[in-house]
Length: 300
Ligand code: CP
Image (cartoon, rainbow, N blue to C red; front, side, top):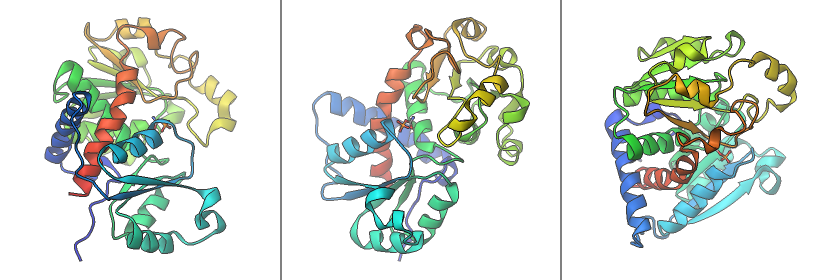
């Protein structure tokens, strides 16, 4: 039996397919907004296993599969046997008998890897402690819609070297843009990942990172699972807030993205989402279209 194509990180698809996926997302969005119906996933069922909260990822997958003609089943730990200790491998085998596609949001990336090892249907990473590849698809779609191809551009990531930052490192390689990362020394991104990507560099100076950037990105300082470190993190990230003055140091036509939810007054200034350079609502909306393109690709 043919092995399913999983999407656990951006390295699971070659650059040509990632670029085609972004263009398809833009096309699907245009077609949907024109009132055209695309039902390539008619009768297909998506299982959604979420260990952590979600608004955008969950709504985009549920709405997306419905718009493509299929259905979604949401499984939280509380209302499935996973919460009572049924092994991941057994759950993967069972769901492979019943549904066509699975998206998993897990605290530990190994959970998703373990599931995909035993799954005979495609598995999508809906965010883990290691990466958030679906968010990157929406971000690249948004940049492409507003400014054209991101190839050869400069992106600055400011803040926590956690899952979004790690995914941006992979994105720099796959979409071939220059990535300048500014984090405190105590919260650097994954060093093995970083050292393998020529396009990405690290500094502890946000002003240096944003110089001549075409896109500036940040994420919360206390990701899910790190909330209890809140006060300690506020101190560690002092000086890493993105505000309009920091954006003024970037390229004239810079745009700003944030995967959301945002903590105003922490990683961004209170008014940054209202800055004319912020494109966060378009970015959030594009989760729907890019995830539709992803599901279509994986079930082709
Ligand atoms: N950006 C993002 O993944 O949002 P949710 O946590 O709401 O899914």
